[in-house]
Every structure is written in C-alpha cells, then in structure tokens.
Image (tube, rainbow, N blue to C red; front, side, top):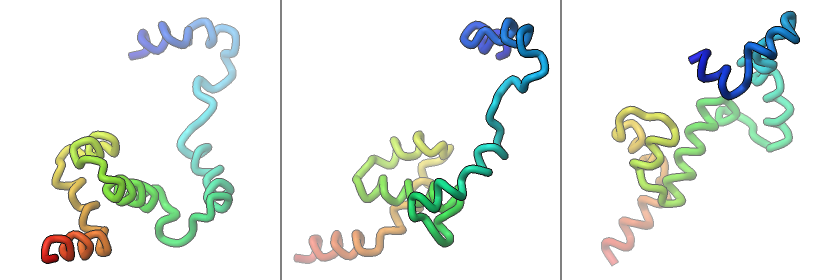
Length: 104
C-alpha cells in the first residue's frame, strides 16, 4: 500500500524534505476537534449531532428520496442489505401515506 501511496503522492521525496513533519496533517482527533463549530453552523443539535446520528439521518433522507436500498447499502458501507432496510422503518409518515394509497 505504501508503494501505491508513494506513486500517487510521492511520499518518499516529501519525507526527505520534511522529515520532522507528520505524514498526514489531519488525524481523527483533528477532524473531531473542528466538528463543534461545523455542527453549530449547520444548526444540528441533540442526539442526531453525533457521527452515528448524522449517518442515520443520511440513511433516512436517502430512503425518503427513494434511493434504492442496494445503492444506499453500498454508500454507507453495510455488508448486509437487511441492516440498511432498518432505515426504511424510520419513516412513519411515509408508511401511513403508502398504506392510505393501498386502501384508497
């Protein structure tokens, strides 16, 4: 993998010039440190203001936009489509609307 990264980013030459610098400027903690400001700017509060909450919100929004389960499953990295199908259960109003169409 390092050979592939070296081909793309020329890492070995970069290391010679900047031996004391980190190889990657961003880390998981760097990304998490800036999330509070981004979260506040986006107006996201409460339980959905976590990585898990954001992922779930994305899944529910995709289902609401009629993204096929197989595509959404790939996009959010689920190994089993049954896991992705859980997001479809989060749409109470949508379920009522479908049931009303079925019986009208």
